[in-house]
Image (cartoon, rainbow, N blue to C red; front, side, top):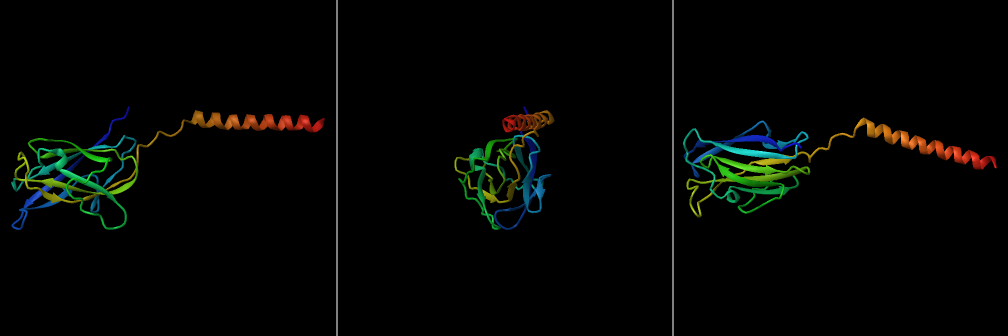
Length: 180
């Protein structure tokens, strides 16, 4: 059985003098313009690794509670929302936080095409019980569901032969009854 496709999204944090103390940029092979596009290429969805790249040492990390590290919601139209903390979607959900709170692992089932927005949340107090969270809000696009393998040529040939056999049998039966 095919496993989910793996993808990495680098969340590059750069020190900033204005609050919250960082700016961000998303880098990934999935990036198309301003959003991430998920084409699963015959895989049952994705495992997505959001990795914080903090070369400027801003100190921001994902919180210990992976459910607080991301919020997701679908949308229609041209104005994607900034999902608030606690927003969830059963197609794109967090699994775990690891690597000293610099990696958030997310499961994207990608079962149906949909436009969705997600907000990543980072904090300077990742191990706190109620840390102050700062949002990072990119957008995404699921392009397809699990692609089925094409029907075998044998199955197609068998169907055509079966239909042809039924047509011949009906024609023969019609001719026999017409002669009587």
